[in-house]
Image (tube, rainbow, N blue to C red; front, side, top):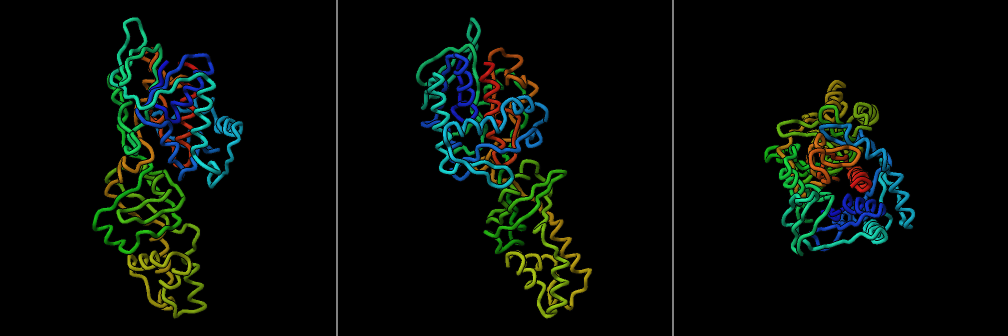
Length: 388
């Protein structure tokens, strides 16, 4: 069998297939395997999330991912990490990281591939894929053609093109007549129009705890003001749900009881300005922005209580309409992809093309920020590797 793509999903698939005694060739156009693994998690690889489950993924068919995720869990991958003696730690919200380097994960996968007898061919371009006359596939490459009874496409999506990402998987899907769910950047910073940026003058670099919401989706994490708009984990998370023309709602400083803080200040030192009191509980520039937007300032003793409530409501339901996103250049993943209706959820095989499989980011299954997309890569690769 041939696997195109030496990323997380492709290498996991190769390991599982090799363990089954399959003769496996992995092809990648890059000079090194696992480049997205290498840069992930600030170089320490957020390799899974202990809470990963179907609820953490977006897809037109939310049930599709259940089978693969149930058969290869975060505990299964963690067992592999521990067998290789890789030190790890848990950060917030169940995110697991390497203590030392993401390269430890790549080295682990490469060792597993070698032990499973997998051949890895790098710096190799795939030039054509055709059905072979007697069944299977003929793959044309820059290093000559090869034949395979089974073919797995594990080339990912369009995100981070500087790492070599392309729409290759989607082109192959279309070649074989498969439906695609519209692709778009996900887990990506959002941009604001010039007028909105002007209203946030002086804010770039300011970070604040926030609950970012769109529809029924809400994420509570840090938010960062940038020179082009908004970023930070809370914004990256909600970007997967946001669509052009929509507002997002921000609840700033969700643990801060603004009315109580201002009322207490009025009782102890009524001459303090509203802005001064707020700045004791949040970044000074944010306090200035809130006062500027609401027009509520002056000595706290002179501000009626209902105005405190209005200011608190502004912070609780601050609506912003992004102009767009930073695009695939900085998107961590690609939303959409090969329509899951085309695939068998147990094997990731194309129902209409025997022997052809799609796994990982190429499929219309997209995880939240925080190790979920790696877990989908491991699980979908494992499913295909056991079947192809």
